[in-house]
Amino acid sequence: MIVRDFNESKHTRRRVVSEGWESVRLLLKDDDMGFSFHITTIYEGAELHLHYKNHFESVYCVSGEGSIEDCATGEVHEIKPGVMYALDKHDKHILRGKTEMVMACCFNPPVTGREVHQADGSYALEGEAI
Ligand code: 9YT
Image (cartoon, rainbow, N blue to C red; front, side, top):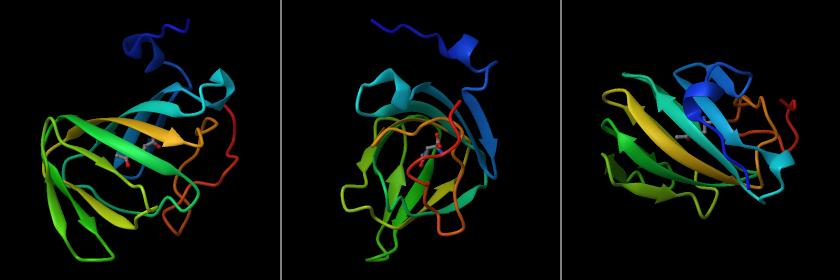
C-alpha cells in the first residue's frame, strides 16, 4: 500500500511549478500503478493551451471556477466543483481559471516526475524523473 500526504509532499520535489499552474504529483510512473495522480492548482486568470498528444488525462474539479474549450469544436464547458472532464481523444484544449482552481488529475501513461509542457502543449513521454 502507498500512503502519501499532500501537505508533506508539497514541500518536496513532487511539487512542480510552471506558467499559470503548479502541481503536486502524488503518484508517478515508478509507483507502477499504470497511471499518475496529481493535485494541480490552476492560478486565477491563467489561460493554458494544452494538447496531451502522448497521454490520456482525466480531471476532477475540487474547488474554484473556470472553463475548458474544446479546440476541435469551439465548445466551452463550465468547470466548477464536482465537474470532471476526460481527454479521451487527446483533445486539444484551452483551460481557463476564472478563479484559482484545485483539480485532481490522472495521467495514463503515468508522468515520470518533473514534466512541464513542451511548446506544443504536450508532455514528453519520458520526462526528468523526480
Ligand atoms: C488540469 C490539468 O491539465 N492538469 C495537468 C496536470 C498538471 N499540470 C501536472 O501535474 O502536470
